[in-house]
Image 1 (cartoon, helix red, strand yellow):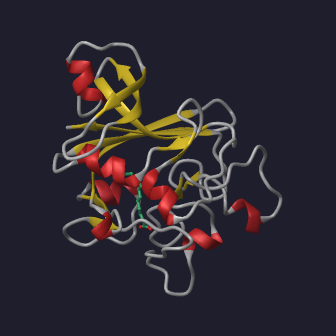
Image 2: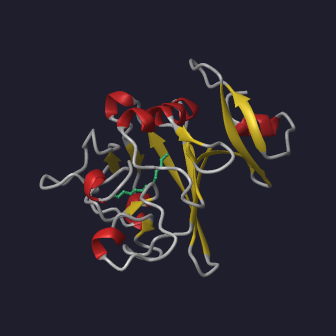
Length: 216
Ligand code: MYR
């Protein structure tokens, strides 16, 4: 199968680790979340701070972490799974008071030649609170501390925050930020955390996050 959705269509109903093989790619293992609306491939998970997400470009490209715990699947694998098809992304967020939020929207990810640019169409980009939109939507490359493609000329978002992400102006979101078990006193520390501005705000370090994809 080329992704978790195909496994689901073959009748698999149990979530867990499966081997998949997208077109033109070597096989690899992924976490599948089988739900009532089909099979989702998990591309990121944060839950306890056990894995260091402040990693260089090569690690974000290839993936890192523990498939049973916290991990980043890897940009190349995500790009291969999506291929030329349309995909939807599900972002699941949890705070420290037992609240959860889930967002779903269509996305596309370019290849390494585009620095794995995230493509969002309108009106999705505006609804998500993106600030750097053109009439055709948003196209935003991925950045790490050693490969800065963000939109700030005066700083390197990945360096002044933490982790690798689709940074525009350093303030929208960063689900690959530093994991904090309690809210740091200092703003300088706090801004490095895991955040999603339009939910709990810029300076609230989230408790858990999961990112999943499914073909549309
Ligand atoms: C800005 O305007 O500063 C940037 C807005 C960026 C929105 C980022 C949304 C991130 C969603 C993660 C995409 C995962 C694709 C596989």
